[in-house]
Image (tube, rainbow, N blue to C red; front, side, top):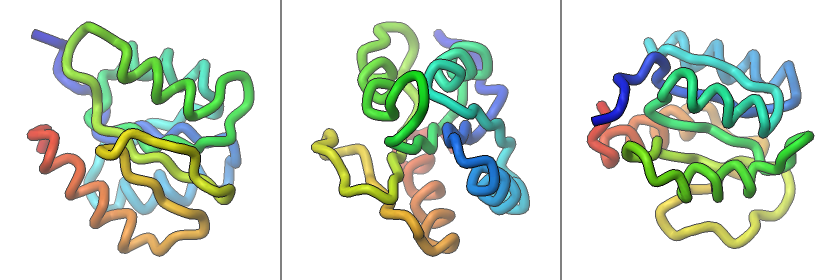
Amino acid sequence: MGQPPLVDVLIVEDEEHVAELLAEVLGEADYRVAVAPDGVRGLEAIARSYPRLVLCDIMLPRLSGVEVLRQILADSGAAPPAVIMMSAAAPPALPPDVPFLAKPFNLDDLLDLVDDRLRRSGAS
């Protein structure tokens, strides 16, 4: 059995103002939030904090969001966190169970999607 989550939502986003806004909105919705500024630190934060959900930008320094997603899905340990991918660029091919948010997006839509993904994963 895996470790209990220390974080509800891990935001992996390199644009500081976007990460701060998302953290504020999710925090006001009573989620425990952490932020990682790039893909490598995102994977380190996943291993350290066992998030219930990862909100991941696709265009990241050091390691792309797509590679972060691949590594999350390839981890043979405990059940992986739910994942939501986001980007201002056109979405790449993603697994059908990984939702995509096109930036800019409505924050109410984000909250609805986060709630839905956590409920579906059985993590809420």
